[in-house]
Image (cartoon, rainbow, N blue to C red):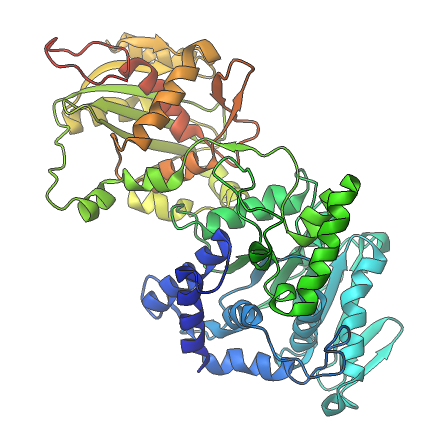
Length: 574
């Protein structure tokens, strides 16, 4: 039974029985979480084995077009069972529409990418059941777009069961019964999307796309379809400024990470790559043949594939100019100077109050009522997030931190599309407040600070602010009687606090409320350093918004040096 097969496979991946990278393990953990909660009000999807097996029966009709298996019927590999079992097995329990309308699979060269894409293209144009379906194989170059199209055409022509079901003419494959088509599409065709009504878009080798133009051409035409599918399948590449790395890879890394609150139920993701450390440095040895299968789950599962990989590695070691191509195409590693992630998110998760309850059932959670609080603010000029951070030193030597953020109402819909995080849920849960209008009304934030101090019973020692966009705010809060401290945004002021805050997390001396907004922001944060190893959070290079953690750090700057109120309690030392 497919359901149990995928459960067993996932457990084997997580336990290390199947050699896999971290993101592969995360994808399996996500599947198991979904199985546990399927059919609930929180998660209204169910896994339909018959739907998934229908795709695999279709796949089995075709024959391999290349390699040692040429001419033999396709028997899906375990990674294909997992990827396409997910994409075609999950449906909404009421509408029965497919759950996933977008898929991303990053895997090394020669791991059946074209074959998998061709099976998807032919299935979506016929057996999936949509009348007048339009399937586009999209790439930047016409020749690249034709690779998947040619594979689909060959597989159909060599399939006796489909004789007379399809017709190929003028660069279009047509399914006669449903009047559906499969067509290559490239930037060279100068298509703007007018008149297209795609049921399915296959985005091939997305790493080579300089812009998201082809993606948008497909996506914008799908609005009339009830259950469309965009499927991206790619290797890594050397361009970290393109949409594949900058948008999709960075997003799916957050989506899969169990310590990150990012969740989009309609997006499937699988990444097969070599592993890196928290700073983005490669930790797998490319000369170790045992790790090759992480990026090559199919190619390195049989002797000929391993032999070919040895040849490619030997050439790359002998000819340095070949190494980038080997690393990106065969080891599936994005190649450039890595961005240095600020925080180990597993360590951060361990500081959450809910985690502490699990790990230390006898530990008494601190009552922060009546304690001294240092507030930090990071305000936007107009339309972005504005955040307030709270830092409360505890007599035990630990530190309690929290945040609250604000977003203009007229910006919300746009930010939901671009940031792809559950703002609506965060608003409902109380971590985020919507401010009426198109821009930030700072008076709402001023009022919130006053009310929060009273609600929590805190003594607001100082309000620490970044001067940018906050001059009037600072004057207004000073007029209310608060001590206002400007936090200069340079290395002399911020470097040591940024380092010390991270050190406290590593020592598990930070406590937080498992706030998903703060966790999201912290996961986005990357650092930049100078030749003296001073650190700053790099807003320009951080993935998405970091305003909540920037606000907390502003408060932390003062909290770490200010003397305690009583004079006889040392707040903490480093």
